[in-house]
Image (spheres, rainbow, N blue to C red):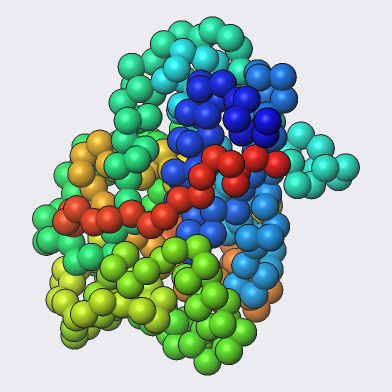
Length: 312
């Protein structure tokens, strides 16, 4: 009998929730090792690493951080207290990104239960959003979600957002001339399951507010003034990337509570990583994710790996 078959139902639920996290190109670059029923290790799955666009492994760590946040929330929702240690032995065991010890009992959290129920509802939404502005109280809640995980969410005004859209377009053009990059994108959009119907339509007129993966369905007009935000961390090391991933997922779930959708515009960050460039010092921190937020239609989700594939 395989390990997957003998896992108890509670542990399977934790892993299913973790596997619902967003990830770069839907690579889902995580695996889990279950020890004695009350310890779960989060491992990097380097077979799913984007070697061309993510040479530092930054996006892989951010993705795994999002899965870790889901694992924590699922435990809290089940009345278990997760004790998390990030990078417990980075030198001897670099693949182990986090160790989570679960107390058999913890205080039940109604908030965690609500967030847990939002996990399968969250989607990356590359469809056009409507023109409604996100209310200030919701923006404050999203900022607080980032701060909860020791990150910062910076909302851009219209002028700064327009400039960032131009930077994304310039980066997209440069990336499109890189054959290795384009081959990697084509391989993973097919392998990991990013079909045309989740890639969104081609923008008509103006700057394109979503990323182009090469298989977009149809054409459409997007919102005239996309609402953009940048997720930053104080430093730019693996520990910070894991925190950024946890902050990202907490933001997305907080947004889902208010029907706020999100997509991502990380071309300039990919280009930065690929060219081994460093960020200029800025009081807002190091950018880890560029997000487009707003109110969009219900969209399908990309495929997820079964629990049997997630076990180390």
